Length: 592
Ligand SMILES: Nc1ncnc2c1ncn2[C@@H]1O[C@H](COP(=O)(O)OP(=O)(O)OP(=O)(O)O)[C@@H](O)[C@H]1O
Ligand SMILES: [Ca+2]
Ligand SMILES: [Ca+2]
Image 1 (cartoon, rainbow, N blue to C red):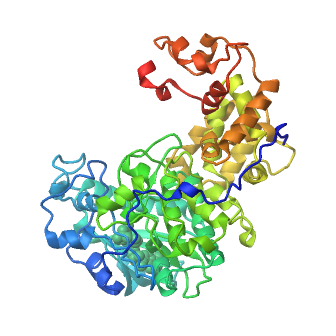
Image 2: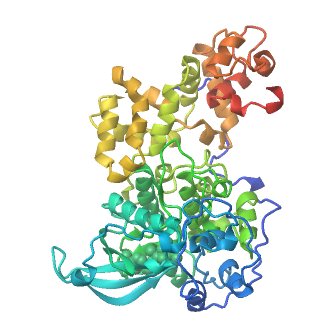
């Protein structure tokens, strides 16, 4: 790609920023010594007979529950942190307490009953699953336990899988006390069934039911949870070992996101090794909180586990980027052995997630590569628009050369292309200028995506290419999340093709570039290029219509600084605003 005439001296994009530590950071000194016995904790947190079934709670989660007994409060709500030295055995990440309460159908969690929260007696607990569990499978010993129920090893007694060792997650119907809880189980099975086939996702066999339980039959992972592996290693991973874990997590999560599924409960407990061998494959499990999400949809229910929850989830407006945040938390833990956001109470953790910047100054961070730190920081960007996607993370310089990593197709590309296709020609020209300032690292990802869309390598992509690429990767989940409908918004490509230069302009994320230290230089450089062959005299009314500003807005006041008075062309400020595709919503209210 062409460059700017005056290439600015750029600081190392991956260097540590000095302002990283936020004074509001929660103190890192451990104050709540952990017993050191994870089993105790598991018993306290997971095996308690007092943990009834829970269901997703769409609203009012953060409401305190004053009537929760103290004994239960301490069991459910006092998360402990990792010790630095010796490595702390962390407690398993608990689900967000209020979510749990809601899922349990506890009345005190929300004074107003949720939609679908009928009396347990009226609930229809028929799932339409096969009824012949007992005749088909022989259940062996218990291998794990969660809030829902327990998981046992089992063996197929007959049929095509005769003799096959499997795992069965048993979910008692008695614990399904709300319609939402029932819907959760339905969705967990639907998602597992739909996504089946990815090598880092637990293989699904079948679901059964009888009067008492639902049975989810899946591949048996004999190597235990990633959490146990982290503990047994004393918490520290070499960068290469952390990469081996990260590649697998990112791969399966990028796959889920492409299918329109957001996991919403990513944490080391929910990744299992296939065998005891650490080099065996990691499998994502537990889609109990997962949901379908359309590309232009925002979810609003606060679900997940406190340590791993993304800030925008707490703000109740999120999508697939929330999973990437959780992966950032896992990456941080793998690389340094501490949690990035910690406090002794759940609300303290939320405060840290919303306000504090994770520390990168204490050991071992100074001895880790600048790429590793940059990788984690980009996953833990508090602004979901600036956070990189799972597929982008796989093309990050820290990881992309590890073991021949393949960058998967990224759903983000389609979202950005859709916005581009709807943009005015002036904005397209601005984006094109910006795309010419991209560095080799940024182009790497775009080249990979372009190649996935255009396997015949004839230099440009058509709508047909996009359809084919998606079909190749599509599962049934994609239908549910209506990604194929969404693609009809790219239908203007029916009559033309898009070359790589235009693709770069269409698929670059202005917000992500803005998060870089060198953004100002990118933007200045792009403006210079735009001046040469994109900028033109523009009348304020025209600009207002480009930006979709309605007649009720005093455009002369609002857009005054966006146009250069000397020649009526776009000013630098106007150029940057145009890049963002500013709409009336993002203009300051006082001026409107
Ligand atoms: N396929 C499997 N193979 C082996 N063990 C498994 C398998 N699936 C689940 N387990 C074990 O059972 C535990 C609980 O399973 P899972 O997380 O699906 O249950 P849950 O009730 O949804 O739990 P949570 O409280 O985390 O929401 C896992 O952490 C794991 O140790
Ligand atoms: Ca789990
Ligand atoms: Ca679960």
